[in-house]
Length: 385
Length: 75
Image (tube, rainbow over all chains, first blue to last red):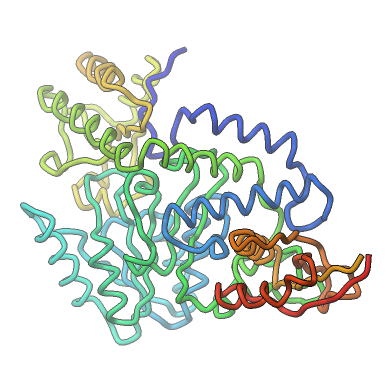
């Protein structure tokens, strides 16, 4: 079956051919364990690892030695949040955080950590300045004496909402707070500059906008972080300091216990090369165009209700079909080869913002390889729902 | 033949050192440290010509790449 794949916010498909080639080349040549042995295949594996660290650092304006590989953005967020947050402290989370942030933060309650939610924009805002002002006012209102950090989901995975990283980063810098950014939906589709935005830890998946495969993610730490102060999430072999019972004091090995998946990491490096070749802004513009194209056509269907219809979408369109459950619609669309996602998208807070917390909704999410024909196919299928 | 090894805090820093030195026209190879040179078990360093070690140390210091010590080796 030829699929119409509109679930790129969950994981991007297809991947560029060069990414698939990089995976296979690594599997057949760099089959040793990076950083452990000194034979040739292990050295090639270590070179794949460092090449990808360098690509990530170069793309986001950081240092290659501060890239910690993870299995997903969720893993990355868990690692960053738990490594940076001391007991009995307070965190600020936006009103649109994904469960990848919400749940690890909630889990820290057993260590006395509390959190408050800040606004991610102004109701009925007509421009970005109004949204930014609302975010900053809310941060200030929610900040407590023991607040240590701010976590920001850069771009919602279902709503047309983007947090102002520069303004939040400046606020954190001015107030001595750490700043963790969840770039799950934005990495690879716009410029994110670690230093300029005062980001302490940038967390991203490899398998979405950066065009890699599932099984990759990373945290890129800023220079201000003191490595030895980072609490480890996992302990184990690191290829160095083997006689010590504790993890090495320096990044990235401090937070990288166990064998790294070289094949998908080599593919991720190639994915980032692809993104840089096309230009992340161009990719973002194309996805935004397709979202606007779809929204425009869905607005003409009387039985479709768009959620947040007036805000500019980046890559996702959230909607409901009158009188039908999202899951039933998604299933019917799936029978016709159209892949999109129903439910709460692991983002209950975002759904609460638009009143779809109890019912759920349907999300179409575009990637670089989608075309107008994919949107047309969805509209055609929905006309007959 | 005599060569020198600069011991590094980790494989990643050895790789960074190799990259930084290559940009300054100094050839260095990432190498696993002989067991007798490692203080806490497995360790990594960079091998280079002994004549380059002073300049390499200077470059690494300026470039903010941490390193441990220089070893002179035969063979």
